[in-house]
Image 1 (cartoon, one colour):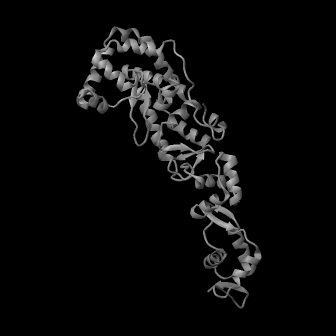
Image 2: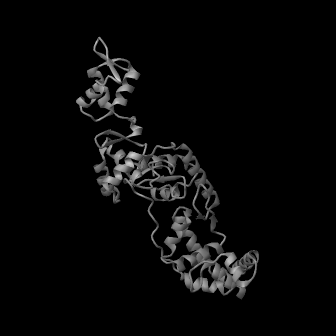
Image 3: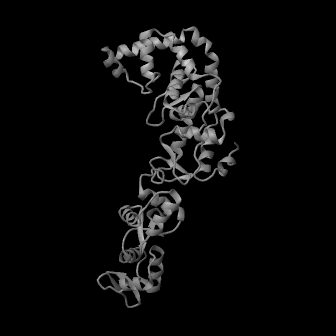
Length: 362
């Protein structure tokens, strides 16, 4: 992908394309059964329970197995490790080499490093099948699992050097993003591409790059296809307020609360009652009431307050002004009629008309 080409043609709101369910030349059920037969009986039982390889797909913890067998958690771990080693040293494991190569090639086609949940969902349509592939991944040293951290989801990879480069590129990309602002998907992919200079060009396609982005817990996108830090208000979508923020931002100018509720329904397929939407807008400092039922975003430069407050702030900022100038200034901040401004301006408790016709705050 050349810089600024595919990135700019990405569809709004598009997400990383999930790998479709894959079919292998081998039968995972038969293969796992054959491999388990190579482990001692006690170890085999532990492996079956730990990986959910029996009739019950539930995977048991070391503690649960230990309690059932009246042995310690550590002893269960030792039996499990010995069972895995026995399988790895078996003839059945050596004969299964082609199957592991096939599995490795599949992960390679996904971009070398893949979020664990995404990979397992592609490998198996049901939990039992996913458990079998999880067992196969653990068995072969070609596959390496990295645990979930504050920065990344749990993931599997087949190349430590490439995985390290991806982790570092994602960290640099995160550091380059503004705290609260969002950018387009095209811009984000262009930035990410710049950070991937040490990675094989064969992987640099939009699908793989989005899959790598999905590894990060600190970078995310919203329903409008905008990207940023997951802590950014436009990315952290939790309820009606956040959907209202996106709706007004997309509209680009103040909206009536009833229109905001309607837009949330059409744009995000989220049910939003008009009254509820109005209440949420009132309580959130990201929104400013700028007219009868009209709300704008604080980030656009609007400040809270009634018309009187706007007049006072205008006069304190610029000094005494004539009536027409005040009306012009106030209407840039509030969607109100001229008469509403004049009624407030002529309230002698707050404003005074000078001899030259200009007004000043009391």
